[in-house]
Each structure stands twice: as C-alpha cells, then as structure tokens.
Image 1: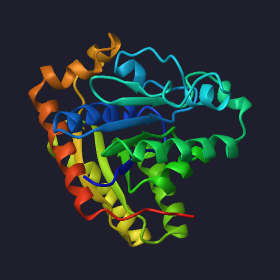
Image 2: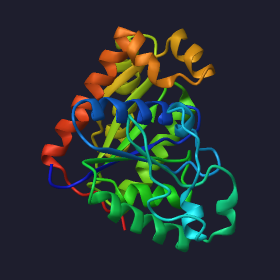
Image 3: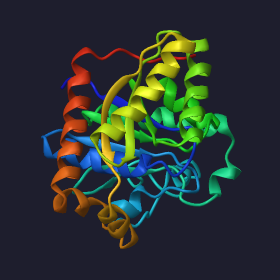
Image 4: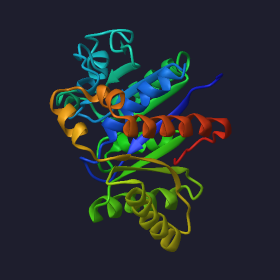
Length: 256
C-alpha cells in the first residue's frame, strides 16, 4: 500500500465494545501482513493498552508537555503500534486547539510508516470525536441492539450528514446472539437512516456476545479470545478482510 488508510471507531454511547473491536481488528490486519497503528483517543478512559497487556509509559499529553519525544509515545507491540492520548485526566490542562494540532502532527508522522491507522473514539461527540470524523477515510459505527445505542448513533449520523451529505459510514454490530440477530439489528438501523436521512450505511460485519469474551476480559486476555473461539476468530477475519477491501476504493471523509 502506498498511502495510509484511516479508520475511526465511533459510537453514541459507551460500553458498546469499540476498544475491543479496534484492538482485535488491529491484530488480525497485522497478521495479514500490514503495518498497523492504533490511536486510543478515549481521553481519561483509555483501555486498549489493557487489551494488549501493555503498560502506558508515555502519552500524547506527555509529548505536548515535553516530558517525552514523539518516538517515546509510540509503543511498538507484537500486534500493532499503540499511541495513547491520555490515560488519566492530565489532558484537562491542555486546550483543545493544542491537543488537536499535536494529533495532526502525530497522524502525519504515522502516515509515513503505517498501512492502516485505527482510531478509537470516546463515546458521544466531544471535540476529539469530530477530529476523528474529519481525518478518517472511513468511520465505523459500533452498535449494539439497544434503543439508546441506535438512537445515539443515528443522531451522530444526522449531524454529520447535515455538514457533509456524502460522508462515508460503515456499521459493525457487536454483542449479537447469532448471525440473524446481528443482521436484524443492522436492518433496524439501516431502515431508520434510509427513511429519515435518505442515506445508506454499509454493513461490515458482527461479533457475537459470548461468555468467553466476558471471562477473558476480566483477566485482561482480550487477544486470546480470537485464538480460542473459532466463531469469533472467523468474524474478525471477515471484518479485517472487509476493511482491507474498502481501501481499494478509498475516499476521503472531510466534514469541515
């Protein structure tokens, strides 16, 4: 690949599994021979490092405050390179303009070295979420079959489409009981967007809700799940395959 492709992972509410999906997708894409970087932008609540069993030594905030170099904040793991923006609330002492300028510089640096850059967003629509929407080639909406999840993501889509009518969203359905259940959840969301916004959201895939996921997350073994469960492994294989194929006809999502 000649250029990096940037995928944002967003939702309207917390607890839907964005970080779980982003960290395992990064691993699967790496296994397919690509260089992958993950930026954890869930300010103060970052947990991708936990999923990867890594200690965060330096963050983007440390770089901004000159406590670390740019290379210091890039943690090269066996699965991907991880950059954590803030794993405490130190970011509250940095204004948004300074933070977003730093993230622009970071992204330009990563584009020189990585095929894929995955960005995990905080829940809702803080300023950093709009930065993610703006810089991503594709924005992946992570949904679960709950009314608040669907309605919150719908409101996010409505806002973005009002700013940029041809913005590109994809849907990943998480915590599904089975394939039919996941497709039904996607169909509900798809029909809602088509009816009221006259837009189409592409379906990328789904991930089942299983006891093994909850059990392994409790012991910080997120990445072991797809090694020990064939169905989950296959679902992440499909998701990673679909993401790679999307890059063949990549278009830039710019909302500003």
